[in-house]
Image (cartoon, rainbow, N blue to C red; front, side):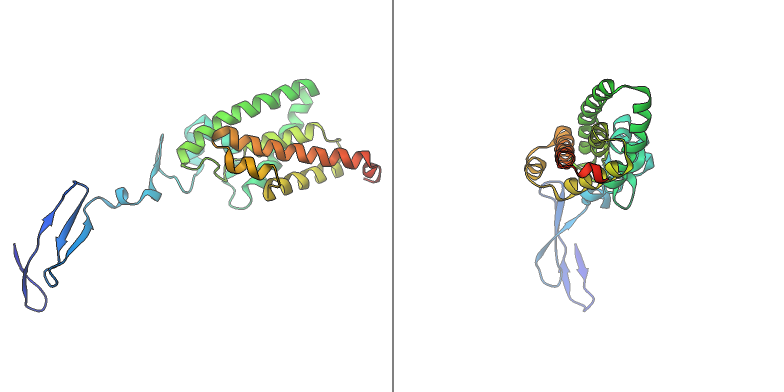
Length: 222
């Protein structure tokens, strides 16, 4: 096909599609082939991919509609606590307080420990499913790991405001800075188990510090 360029020159435009996905076009002024895309814009932008099972939802910004679309998503996001724009991990940890108070009212410590173990197993499934849907195995909005781990911490923490406040600060500190061995497992483990396990380690370190403080008599000053 003969075309005229803006400066009056005449050249030929050639389009070929070697693999059916793209094409090359000859610049009429330079005679060089240039690659160009003929796919729809949505197909060329992976970051805008839509979530499986949640049509029309941007995978980079989960919304209320997303967490309502599947039970696993709802659990992983802590019923919506993980949608917080600021500190979703902190919001998830705070959500453990009312949950623990309710459970502790109805169940004795042993039964509550069994419930926490069930929460851990449920979290492996829920966070695994949600992570695959989001394309991020440890998305920041998934806070069921914080909720479960801190519920365990509260179970072994004296029911005193100062003790629980220090437990909260310690847990958030360990969860954020991820000292060894938390950092190692956070980097090596994948899937729902990896999401849940590193917070379980943060809970263990928190309880270890609280036990040390109690043994040193710090608790008598609180």
